[in-house]
Amino acid sequence: MLSSALAAATAGTLLTAVPLAVPLPVLAAAPAQARGFLDCYAEVPGVTARGVPTTYRFENGHGASQNRGPGTLGYQPRDIAYPHHPADGASPAASGPTAVTSYWFTLAGSELREVREVDRRDARGLLLSASYRTRVVRKHWEGVRQISVGRGRDDLYVLTNTDQLLRYRLSGADGNTTARLDDTVGIGFGSIGTFEYARSTAAGGEPADVFLATDADTGELLELTIPVLDPTAYTRTVLATAGWGELRSAGRTASCLNPRSGRSYDGIVTVDLDGNIRLWTDRNARDGDGSDIVRRGVLKAAWKPMAYGD
Image 1 (cartoon, rainbow, N blue to C red):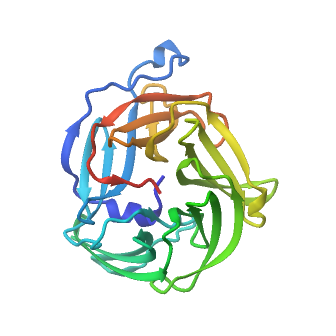
Image 2: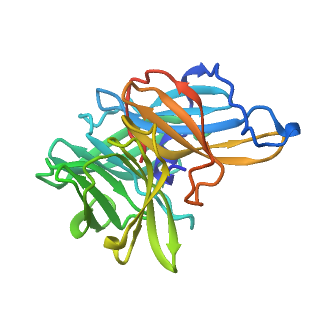
């Protein structure tokens, strides 16, 4: 799901709860005795027009938006990238019993910026306030349109307006990060509409980052597997051939459970250009097969914040 940095930043009291009126049926192929409803969870990070980071969260049939404020970034980013910490316990540094600090990245105008977020919480862990400081990592990034961080905090992947996918190496301590061009993954990425980290794997014994992407021209849903040691040897897998164009974000930040059968489903949550948040289920997100991806319904219509799925 989301990185630990984002999960820590979005925990707390939910605001403006909205009930979901659309039932989410199980797959038609499920046993008759297991038919019923799915319990689903989904998250979409975003930012308001005033630069306040926010998250839409759906759980137990209800949706809610939570602003991580009242502090603001002071600008509305062109894109956001969160580090994806390994499952070995790595997490944002705790600076006290009621404060958690995390670091992430934004495109701000022509600049790549690093954001330092400090969340302050009460004794129950509920979010009281969040403050932000930003610093410029790289200037003159007018030609960059999307960014995404691979597993850990080593590599920043960059989509350019000249159809390239580049990889930058991140180094230095949190709060003092530098980004150095490392390699050109490839060209011909001009039609990629969304590009979001999904997971990491070891294909053929070699570590690789896997990204969920959509093609705005063909409407395809894709997986791009990029080897860490040789990024130019990336592979492209088509999960679905149509229906995935014109999206702001499409990420694997959702999951569902059939409470009667105990069957679990991975999920995909998308946000289209009108702000409609939609849920899809995927029986197995790691099999590279999109035949089991099923559209489930609209979780929220016309969500106002700009959505980011990384």
